[in-house]
Amino acid sequence: MAGPQVGIVFWIISFVMLISAFMVVSLKNIFHSALFLILCLFSVAGIYVLLQAEFLAAAQVLIYVGAVAILMIFAIMLTNKLASKKIRQSNRNVLVGFFVSVIFCFITLVLLVKTYVSVWSKLKPQAVLPEQNVLVFGKYLMTKFMLPFEVVSILLLAAMIGAIVLARKERS
Amino acid sequence: MLAYLSLAAILFSIGMFGVITRRNVIGIMMSLELMFNAVNINFVAFNKFIVTDGLVGQIFSAFIIVVAAAEAVVGLAIVLLLYRNWQGINSDQVNIMKW
Image (cartoon, rainbow over all chains, first blue to last red; front, side, top):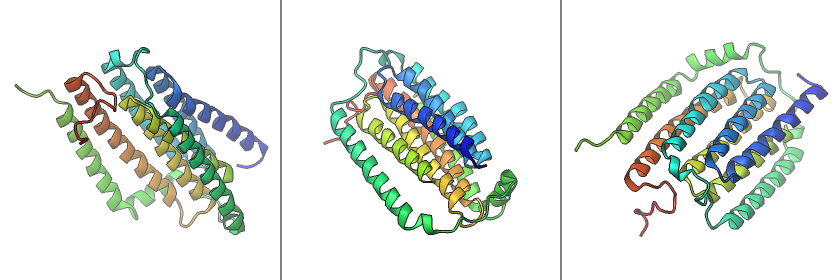
């Protein structure tokens, strides 16, 4: 996985991702921004494929696009009359937020470039990732990361029960 | 590698902008998802370019995906509850814990 093709694909994907992410935070209609969120999550899955994380790409499409984004759209539709265009979707501190984000982004980029030049570029490139990524991933999950795996399943159960308890109608 | 990390930083900043400026709670949660994804890109990029031991970064970002899904479920349940009780889900109306 090298060469100019990967570079071109990377630039296309990141362009789509950033444009759609900006649409997500700036559109007036919250439903449209949910649709752009789906596009953005798809392009993140593309970035995972470029980084040799095939399992994560599949999980991204399944969980984020298939579950979380659909959940968002459900919630938007259930609260439908608030999502109309007449209601202002952004609060007073748009300007402040813009400046804070730009300054944060600038500082982060400067730090990244500095660290890259001083530290990361001097590290010698390590061995390539194993060819059968998913196999190694599963082995890790079943041996070294057994305990976090189980804990995370309990967390999912707790989230499910919590959501049901919260959203249930109170019996009068 | 620098390109991937910069992309993640910009995506995180866009998400932060959304979290700061949105009024709608669902909009805030969508921006949160953007920030989670930026962090995940960071983990996977480090795992690809500066590997310490196998696929640890990818496993960590898988856990992040799971926790983000759980967070979204509970958050949207709270949003529905807010809507049912107060007929509004804008974050500046929800101020009963503010003194």
